[in-house]
Length: 574
Image (tube, rainbow, N blue to C red; front, side, top):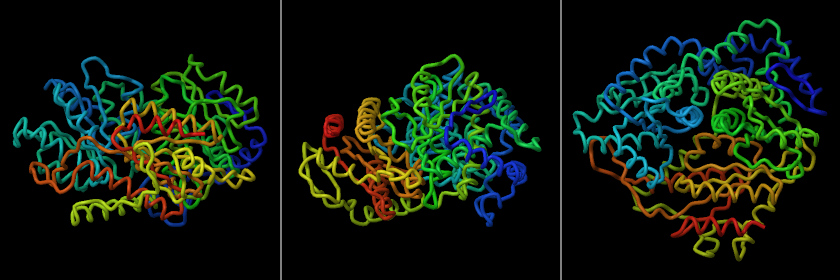
């Protein structure tokens, strides 16, 4: 056992390798070099490194912006706005969603909802919400060209224009984007009430402490200074330290992540106190997009059911984020540590210490990238799915329909698409799961299963998908992930296509009872595609992108009744 005041670690036979790695980080002065923006820490080429390190200074620079954010919040409060609908994907939406989940809404401030699903039913639900009380629409995208975000913006701009008139519609919109982006031009042309231009040297997944996170946090009434000051204490300590010690948890954690992954413990399983568990959604994207490339990767496992030690294979590394006074997972983690599995337990005194944790994990992930020999700031495989989606949409516009692959068989109103001939759902699932790599020797890696649900992200669907996930987890002793599409494309998509290729991908699509047109331009009625078409094109495009990368994929299309179909899939797990 080793540790410091904020963490304790039980690494067993891995401890020596981690300590050796930590010593190398110290001898090479990695922290000082990171602060000097030395791109050679990771690669000999500065591309997508030197222009991705602005997050190092976010705690300090954003403190200076707090008065501007507060003034904006005061203005919209005076105009009786009660809700804010954030339209964004991945790094633009995850941190705000986490803040809302953990901190709630302070009295007198705006409630926050996030739209990151192209499912028509999900869009309609948000439209109904926006129609009940005065709503502010926040359009959030770093690039300014994210297809989903701009589709949401055009739809809701037309919704507001129909209600308030074209001249007044822009007053209910604000944007967060990079300088010079397409969204900045659109926002100015449409008369958005405010545009926050973020530091362009900050990547999306490192943007939680920038305008992308702080503006929504201010709208729900969070104590921005407290969050940023906690992050700043960590940043200041690291920047000033001339010699690393055990107290530098961020550097040590990054070494542990990288070293254990290189020795086969590449399934970083997050166990988090219930009241702050939403933090795992942000960590999932940070770790997956940063480390899953060049045939390597650390799979963040978030939201899985905590099971007895016998349910886990030898590919796990557990990190337990424990809020002071909340011992909900103490017994389970103790059993796992006593069984000899590597565990790190991190103490969090109160929810606002998440400011510190955000910065700690950003540094740790950057250092894990150094240990693995990869660039933690790029995303070389993300474009493949987007390109295929664009091709499919172009075909739809030309032919009036999307191309569908050949159905292997149909059973119980479920169409199955797979490369193995089977006769029923149970056979199809077991045959697919038997393709798993058993990991003969820890360094070879072991398969994981990813459930990718292109369904409406409702509570009922999520509950059933979690049951399916847990059943697969326990039946096959395999790490599992679960995400709604296209949301997960912006958090886990890079890792799925860039890692060593051991993933098994279960794609679930379904019939859509309603559909909505996407305006070709804001303020105009003409539409060439719908949200339903966009969502299905994304599912088909991502499936093909995975296949093109040599990944194993099975697709289940649930016809007419999604709930009944999910229940049948759960029953089909052996």
